[in-house]
Every structure is written in structure tokens, then in C-alpha cells.
Length: 274
Image (cartoon, rainbow, N blue to C red; front, side, top):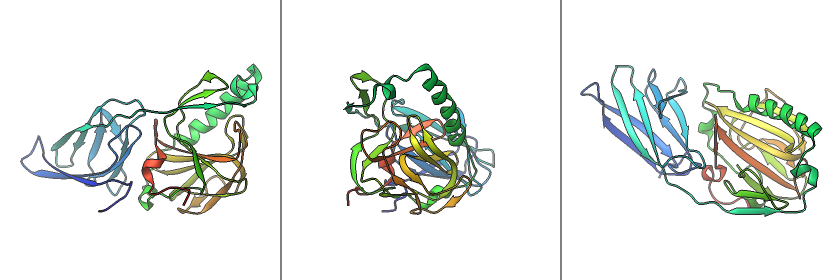
């Protein structure tokens, strides 16, 4: 078995609609809500998912992902350099999600003041900019590792109820660990944001892995990288803390492909507790 994102490789040999020549399209990943799939086409090919263009690296690599509450099907279209077209109807597995109740948070962290909201909006702008970068690189081919060792205390997609009030779903994995536990880059990439302390996120790091795939590491006690720095998978980028909106020390690890929040746990093998 060959693994890149923890699933079987599917080789699609489809008959091109504009040519009698068969085209090979390789897809590898998790066809499930919150899943990430990597593909490879020939240089010069164009890729669309549900009618939207998908960035393709110079080596033909591309990435697609499926939202937490996304549709059960998706349409992939590859326009080859020779003028032929390959189409594939994708079936996406649906999921059910936990409800997670978190009590004991400071009221201000659940219902911010108008002044806090101004700060939150400014910090959100910084985060959106850092996570909106789309480099035509494919650092993600390094594969992924757990960014910290500890107990999983929060999972992707769960509905959050904070101090009894429903809030947006949790997009990431929480790993509970003592303050100071090393946090490493989940994959090769480039640091696009280092923040000394956001209202909700606390000390934060964002790493871009290419083609709009990025990872976030928040609630840190310390950041150990600089914006623009290239990092390798496993390099220490910070330390576990409890800054921002947190009831105890843990790492929140999030992954996003462009505008789609994906499940980090699908990208790695085993457990961070080992």
C-alpha cells in the first residue's frame, strides 16, 4: 500500500471525451467530508472541481477537499493539453459529528465587548491574509506528522457549546499536553504568520504547504519561527500553551485548503498519545 494522506491510491483511467486517447489521472486521499485528496495530471493540464478552477503545481500536483457539511457528490474535470477532457463524478462519504460542551470560560471570551470585536476583526483580517496565500509549490508531498504529543481533547467538526451557548463548529484537532511541550511543523512549508497573542487564538503560527494548503498552531506559550521562514516537517515551531480562549494547556491544530476546513486527523497515522 502506498500512502500520502492515509488512504488507498485510486488510478482513474478514463476515456477522454474529446479524443480517443485514454488519459491517466491519479487521485489519492479521503473522499469524505473533511477529507483532502491529492491528484496528479500532466504538465499543462487544467483542473476544475464543481466548475471552479483548481491550482496545479508545475509538477502536475493538485489538491481538492470536501467541506464539513459538503455535498455527497462532486464533479472533477481535467482539460488536457492535447484538447481532450476527462470527467469524473466523485462520491463523498458523509459524517456525523460530536457535540462538545466547554464550561468555565471567562464570559468575555464567549461574548466579547464592542472594543474586543474590533480587535477580533483586525486579527481575523491578518489570519485570512495568511491563509489565503496560494503558492504553486507542493511542499505537502513531504507527508504529515502529528505536531505535538499528548491526549486528543477535541476533534474536527464537533458542535461547540461554550458556557451553555452554541457556537460555530470546531475546525481542527486539540491535543492536550503540558505547557512547554514542543510543537512541530506538520509538513514542509513556509511560515506566513507569527502572532504574539490574538484574542481567541493566543500566540499563533500559520504554515503554508503549497497550493493553498495551510496549517495553524494556536494557544501557544511560545513561538519559535519567523514569518517567511522555510520549515521542514518535524521542525519545532513553538510550544504548547493556554493563551487566548483556552481552559487548559493544549495545541489546536487546524488545516485548510483555500476556503475549505479539513480534518487534520485524516492526514496522519496513529495517535499523538504514542
